[in-house]
Length: 147
Image 1: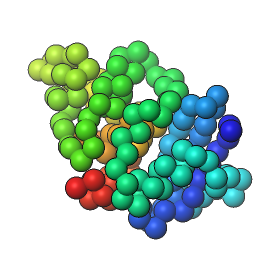
Image 2: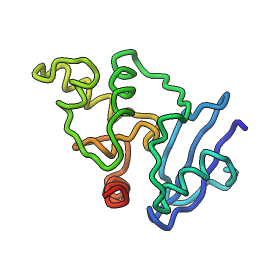
Image 3: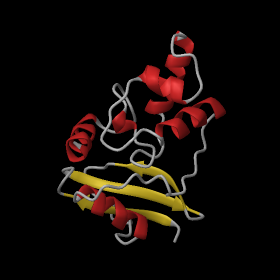
Image 4: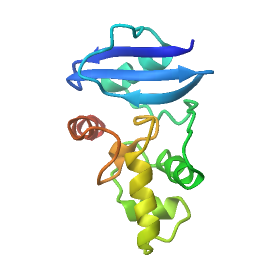
């Protein structure tokens, strides 16, 4: 089931859109409304909406396709291990990724990887304090949901 899938989310006040290729999620975005050419039915999108309805889901078993530089991949894979309901800082992510959390270059790598995250929710950048790929209003709603 390859393609673009999207649905309007009352919880978020906007749509959730996922792109799937070869059974891997390659993109997640939060447009104001679902694109006209997006299908509404996909099992992974069903899981997202169960989560938005209050079901705890870590999404750590969802296959993602990360086409990012290797240093960003290391950071994003580490973010997948941040527990549901927790919020950590960039230094903690650096440590999880095996980087020196006192090196400003490493911290900038973490921040860059989070801003360029192609698959928010599945790489839960909303669980990291600071800028990420998830829009600020969505971050607040997701954190409230996980509280």
